Amino acid sequence: MFDRRTLLVGAGTMAVASRAAAAPPAGALDAAHFGVHGGAPDDQSERLQRAVAEAARRRLPLWLAPGLYRCGGLTLPTGAQLVGSRGATRLVLTHGPSLVVAAHAEAIALDGLVFEEGDVRPPERRDLLHFDAATNLRVSDCEFHHAGGNAVSLARCAGEIVRCRIEDAGDNAIFAIDSAGLVIAGNTIRGSGNGGIRVFQSDKRYDGTLVADNRIEETHARAGGSGENGNAINVFRAQNVIVRNNVIRAAAFSAIRGNAASNIQIIGNNCTALNEVAIYSEFDFEGAVIADNVIDEAGSGISIANFREGGRLAVVHGNLVRNLHSRIAGQDPESEGYGIGVEADTVVSGNVIENAETAGIAAGWGEYLRNVVVDGNVVRRSGIGVAVSVARGAGIAAITGNIFAELRRGAVIGMEYRKAVTGDLVLAGAERYPQLRIAGNQID
Image (tube, rainbow, N blue to C red; front, side):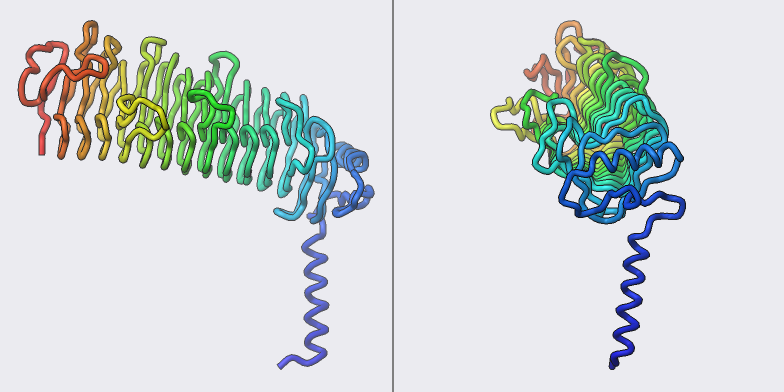
C-alpha cells in the first residue's frame, strides 16, 4: 500500500529521471543556450545555424532536446555534429531546397534525429539531406519520413549511413552517385517510391561501397519504366560493390539489380515477393559472384545477362531459388519463370531450384552462349531442368552431375531462343551437339 510520502518521493524521482533523460550528453553544447527550443512555433533556422557553426568551431556535439524544430536549409560545416534523443528530436522542413545540406565538409555526424518533410516539398533533385563532396560522414540511428524526393542524397561522398529508418521516400531512400567506400548498413527502409538504395557512378569506375544487413520492403516504381525503377538495391556502373545479408521483400521489379557493375558480389541475401528477376547482373559488366542467396517468389530468380553488350564472367553458387513465375500483368510468360539464367564464362554450381515454371536453369540465349558449366545442381518440380541453347553460333557448355526430379518437359532440352528443338538430351541425341558435354546427370 502506498502512502502520501511514498507517492511524493516517487514523483520526485520520476521528475529527476525525466530531466536527466533530456540532459545533453557529456561534453555537448545544449542548443537551448542559443535560443533553440523544441516545440517553438516559429522557424528556428537562424538560431540553429548559429548554434551549429559555434559547436563545429569548437569541435563539440550540439545537443537538441526532445521536441519539434521547424527549420530548413541548415548548412553543416566541417566538424558539425548534431545529436538528438532517438525518435523524439524532430526536425521538420519549413523552407529551402533541403532540410540539411553539406558541401566540401569533413567529419560530419548526425545521430538520433528525426527528419520530416512537413508541408514543404523540396525541388526536383534536392532532398531532405543533401551531401556533396562530404568526407568522413556519419548518419546513424536517425529516422526519415515522407521525403518528397530522396531521403538522403550523397554526391562524391565517403562515410556511412547506418541503423536508420526511412519510410515513404517519394523517390529513393538513399541515393549515392560518384561516391566511394560508403557503408550503408543496418537500415530499415519501407515504401520507397522508386528505389530503396541506389549506388551509381557517372562512368564505370571503382566504388567499393558495402551495402549490408539492411531490411527493405515495399519498393514501388512510381516513375514507371522497364526496370530502371522499382528495385530495392540498384548498383549502376559502380565497381567492386558488395551487397550482402540484406532482407528484401516486395519490390515492383528486382531485389538487387547490378547494371554494368563489374566485380560485384551479391551474397547471402534473403529475397521474397519480387515482380521481375530477383537478382540481376546485366549489360556491360565483367565479374559477378552471386552466392548463398535465398529467393522465394519472383518472375525469375537470377539472371547473368547481356553477353551481347559485354556482360560476362560470373560464379553462381549455393543459392536456394523457388516459386518462379510470371508476375507482371501483360508480360510474356515465356520470358519469366526461370530459376537461373546465364550466358558467358560462368559456373553455375551447387544451387537448389524448385518450382520454376519455365526452366530451372537457362544456359545461353541464341548465339550468346560461351564457356558455361552447369554442375552439381538440383532442379525439381519445374518445366525444364536445363534449357541450353543449340542455336547457330552457340558455344561450349558442360552440363554434368546434376539431379533432376519431377520435370514436366525434360531434364536437358536444346533451345533455339524460346523454341525447344530437341528431346531430352540426357536420354538421347546429345551426340548431335559436339559443343555440349552432358554427363553424369540423374533423373528421379
